[in-house]
Image 1 (cartoon, rainbow, N blue to C red):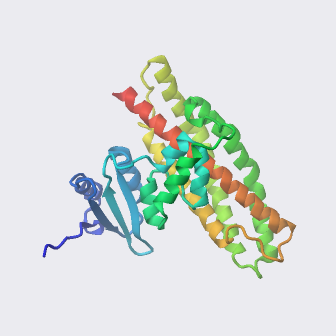
Image 2 (cartoon, one colour):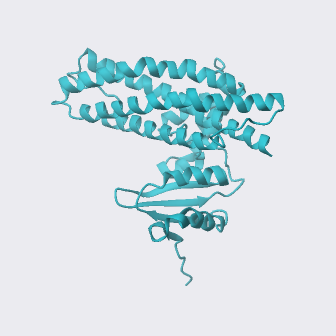
Length: 319
């Protein structure tokens, strides 16, 4: 009988300077459909973005173990041409289909690089049911959604700032205040309110600096790239080198914020109010749910439309 040997790489046994080159070399040796499982003593998320930036969206990344002592990640090379349209691409082409993803708890913004087939396998969902509902969404006659995917990138960047950044700046201070107030008053009877406040505070801190970096550094550079394309001129020298670096950082911060909101939803039992909820308690959960809804669209516009298109333009200008 032939025995299949699992392809495992214990990264902790390698010298620091050899870690990423060794992983890349082992990944490049994989055939389509084959996988490499890496073992590490910390979350190697930066590797994910480096691999994505240098090899493209040709792999899946699945946590088999996620700390606190060991991180085990299965990296599988995709089979090209096998239904590879990603969740993000589907939502970018028709934002109405995002409602179907939300219905089944499918993350199309931070998790937008996965395919329907992959996410259904992960979550134990019936792919035939999901694909049928996605197909039926094309037949629904409704008001035309905003054509985000058709907008120029400089216009889209301004839209994100004026719509979503403005909303976050207006809403987060109230969210933080209400989360603190409700936790103080109701925390003894509902102890989950304490970690909910801590998560809201973490989102407040993360998003406050995140938006500044986008507005002052990343978005202006994306506009420079668009201007170079429109004028047929080379990209001006930037200390960033490539737009890929700051995009990777923004995507990591998006994921961190998304996880906080996901944990809040779990702790609050999908924003279900207890029988003794006061007006402030009710308003807090309403604001949290609205904030999560806005954040999904906000991150989707950046991760699935703005960032991939900026990278594509930069790549063409550099060739």
